[in-house]
Length: 112
Image (cartoon, rainbow, N blue to C red; front, side):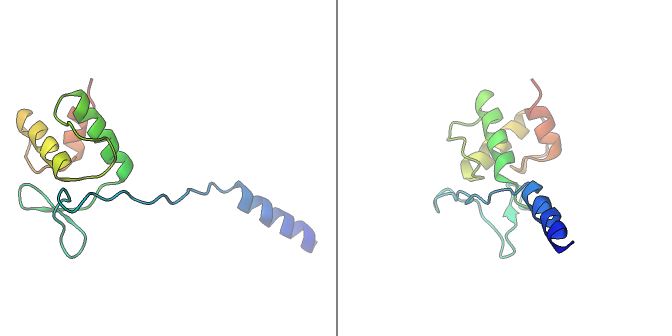
């Protein structure tokens, strides 16, 4: 009975999807966005915002590059260049300009 329980437990562990933890790329200090002591990002409008995931930022950078707003490397790093590109996109589309890839910004950005 013990062996059977151990077998089920081992099988359950083996079936779990284990997501590898990859190091998060960091922007060089000269291009890093301003952050508060709590790790929030200071937006172009002076507000503070939660940081975004690397995968989302890479998608945003790719979409901005396709539309001609971003010239940098698509690397998932939310740096000043990315924030400025998001802000320029927001300004051109009549959105609130904060430099953050908010849901409303992403809806317009990812529209073909």
